[in-house]
Amino acid sequence: MGDKSDVLQGTLDLMVLKTLESMGPLHGYGIARRIEQVSGNALTLNQGTIYPALLRLEQRGWIKSAWGTSESNRRAKFYSLSPRGRRQIEEETENWERIAATMSRFLASSN
Image 1 (cartoon, rainbow, N blue to C red):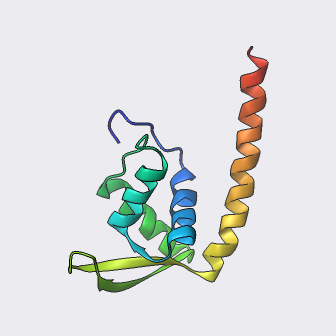
Image 2: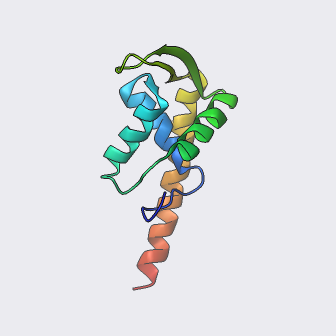
Image 3: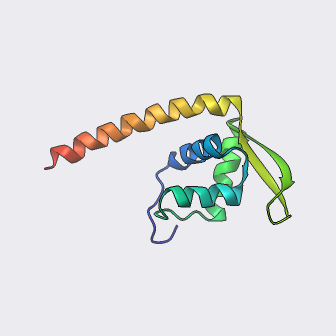
């Protein structure tokens, strides 16, 4: 990720799930570019970051994939949320909200 912000472990999973929830089926390159766009280009995702995450999410049953044709007329694997992935978004969101609230308390106490 170079000099851009590092993604905490587990954060990328939720970003991918939320991206697929809002955008519908996308190929890996499209998911990575959308995450970069939403982050205001604070994050840069390369193939070595996004594809292992997609494989992990697919193995967990949170996303599914199917081959299709990209906008540039190339064969690409498109990813979409599975029913299990839709349920997982709620759990992951609750976890991150709890972590954010905890970190907020630590940051506020240092002033």
